[in-house]
Every structure is written in structure tokens, then in C-alpha cells.
Picture 1: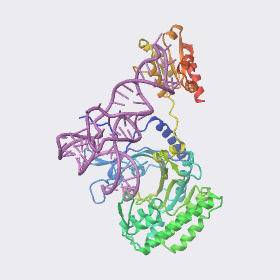
Picture 2: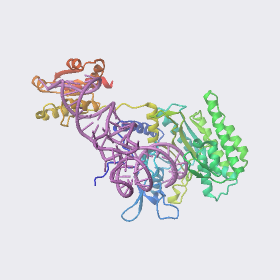
Picture 3: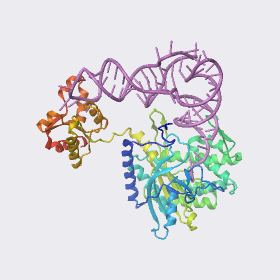
Picture 4: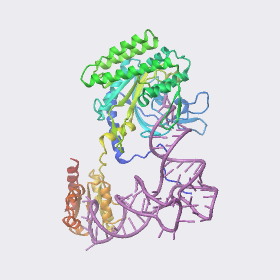
Length: 502
RNA sequence: GCCGCCUUAGCUCAGUUGGUUAGAGCGCUAGAUUGUGGAUCUAGAGGUCCCCCGUUCAAUUCGGGGAGGCGGUACCA
């Protein structure tokens, strides 16, 4: 029984064209991160499951969302599902020797055993920056600025994105203010999740999820949080105000006005009264606001958005989300909203899992794969990367000569290859065309007798062919090719390449 | 995971009310053009009609199950 040649579900092959775009993206991001003073760190893709903290509660088995297996000694191992958990492990392990605060960046593939969807894969790349060991809001403010600078460095125009920020403590405060029992964790999570879906389902959808539940277009039913109608109306009122505030901010900033973010905080302060968590949240939000405002980043690049929830468990303070705000058409002409392309926040308890010592930390991660998908829809298809000069093989007896020529080109720093297949000249030309070669080197018996080589410029040839309708005519004209003494091979090829890359 | 839709050539898709040789366009290979890619014409190759079980004289077509894909939803620490 032969196996079927098939790729694993949720995974994908990435070809040369996309890889070169990815390289460009990664080096751009790296440049920005290094400018902010972060230092590189690479950790393994595989970790012990307990180090990642992903055992199911009260069970001897890892969470279903992570790819896991048992090693020879029956220890559970898992593929990393983000870059933050391995970082916490690394910091805990090397705490004594690291400079504190420790500021590092990392990029790499992470893995999630979840249902794949459009633009959602089970292996994808993240580019992460974290500051460990600082409880200053300045560290959080930097994350927002870093995010904005990075998106702009990648070519996303100001106004086409926004780094939204909020604070987990504020949400906790709202829950307590809404008289939800603090010990009722399950219900709190349901409420958070419902609010997190605001941008997708709208106020009505969230209202349904806070109450009895919601039936979607396919007829499937989602159980709701079952809150009392009075409590629900409080939430909806708050979210409606948050949306209204966002619209106001957008409108004022679009017309070049100055948005008074402090009045939003004042209004919240009034509505919460004296509540410990809410006070902390508002103080932190204000510090962040002052810092971002002073740096000039509160001009629409970053903004307080009270509907941001994210990070349902481990975030402990400020949370950020990078969102693309412009609509984009996909290959089928449908408008897609890409939404979130990155996020982060403060997590003060992750290292303490290992050491017992509370280590404040904050970070931000860009979803590289997702962002690249968005950018490629915006920028259209990139050119295929330039291929090698192809040395044609006309006489099989002279392979040694052809290969010598090829080496000559390579030694001169020119990407080149001799045709290694077995087909005739016509097929070799097609091959060079498909490889996107700048030119081919032809030496048949005529040229060899004269000590020459013929160089055919494929780029010029393509242009010439566009103007000529009759095949015989253009073949006889032999456009865009020249014969030169073999000694000048490298120089002439250099000229052609320079002409097309210049 | 749950709900719905889908699966025919390398790709995009027709089609068979259950019946002999299942089609198109594009792509691919070759010829027209003894040594020249992209135009044109001609020819050719390429299919377990997703898989298994059932109904039937006969299944790519009908029924059941499965797998894969798409969309929604849940999960996304």
C-alpha cells in the first residue's frame, strides 16, 4: 500500500517567493526590535510540558490544544504554543546571571493543536519582545511604541493600524462592580469571552452570550453566561459607551483635532467610585497615557479602547492589541477584515511559577504569518525571485566545458547553473524561463569553433517578442542575444545582470 | 468538538434522470521551426469520477459510514 502524498492538516509548504518576502519582513522587524535595545534569544521548539504549564487541571495529561507526546522515560513533552512560556522558563533557570531588567526578542514557529481556518494554521511564526523585571509603565508604553514603529517599518501607513490598549484590572473591576461572585471563575471566563467577541458579533451577539445564549447562522447553539438582565444591561451600556468613545476618537483625530483621553478616564473614575482594582487600572492607564502622549504616540497610532479583553488567564495589567483598520479584498474579491495582527500585555506571575519570586514582566508579539498574509493582499503578488544564469547543454560530450563555464560564473559571484536535465534545447530554454533566469549561455559547435559563447538576454528577449507576432520572423532576428569571445563571458553576463537589477 | 455545504485530469470546473469509449479551458509534452523560452496552429500524454460498505443485472451517479476541503460556531492558555 503506497502512502498518499499529503500535507498534514493545518500545515503548509512555503515556496521561494513567499520565503524571500518573509526574510525581508523578519529583518525589518529585527532591526526595529534591536533599535529598542532587545537582545536575541533562541529557545527550543520542544519543552517539557510541565515547564510550559500546560497540564490539564487535576489530570496527568497535557491540554488538548498543545501537540504533545511522551519521551522514552514517559515524561510529557510539548511543542511550544507561544514564545512567552519558554522565556519564563529560561529566565527562571538563568535568573542569577541575567541582567535585570532582561530584555530579549525571539522569533520562531509556534504550534497549536486547534482547528485551522482561513489565515489560521497549526504552525505559525511569532516575533516577540519582552521586558522582564520591570514594573514600570514605561516598559509597557515602550511595547506600544515598538508595535507602532514595527508596523510602519513594514510599510503599513499611519492611520491604517491602531495599537489598542486597556487594562485587565479594569475588566476585573467591572465584573466585581457588576456583583459577579469573584470566586465564580468559570462564569467570569464566560463573560470575558463574550465581551471579546464584540467586534465580530456586535452588541446583540454579546448580549445574547451574556444571557441565554446565541444561535449562529449554521443553526448551532452556544450556551450563554445566564446573567441577570439588569447585569447584562450594565455590560451592554458600558460596551456601547466604549464603542461610542472609539467612534468619537476616530472622528476627532480624522479631522485633525486633539482627542482628550483624560476625560474618558475621568468619566470612568466617576462611574466606578472608589474601587480598588478600578483605581489601579485607571492609574496605570493614566501613566501609560501620559507617557505615550509625551512621546507623541497618542495621535491615533495608539489609543485606549475599553473593549479590548484578550489574554483571558495570564495577563495581570495592561493589555495591547495591534489591529489593521483598513478593509482588504481577498483573491475572490471578498472584503476581509484582518483585525488583530499582534498583541501583548503585562504578566507579573509567569516566572513566579518556577521560582516563587514575583517577577514583573511585559511583552508584545507580532503574528508574522498573519501579518504577511495581510500585507501580500495589500501589495499584490511580489515578483518571483531572480533565478540563476543557465548554461545550456547542447552537446552532451562537452559537459565538462559547460560545467567549467558555470564554475567560472559562480567564482565571479554570479548565481549560475548548468542544465542538469536530459531534454533538448527548446525545453532548456523553457526551463530557464521558468527559473526566471536573467540570461542563458549557449555554446554549440559554431561558437566553439570560433572560441565564442552566445549570451541570450531573456528579459530583453521577452520584451522583443511582445512586439513580434510572427514566430519565424523573430527567430530569424534572434533578438537580445550576442556572441562574444569566451574570455569575456563573465564581463558580458555582469553587464546584463546589472542592466536588469539597476 | 458541534452545525451546514462541498470532493470528477496538475489547476478551474462541466457532465452522467444508474448503462459500453467521462469532457472543456488552462497547464504539461511533442511537432510545425537540423541550435532558441514568451505569439499561432496541430497532435499527444494525463482520471480507482475522495475511500469503504450496502442496494442493484449494472454505481462516478442511489443509501449508510469514513476521510479531506470550505464556511459558521466553540476552543485559542
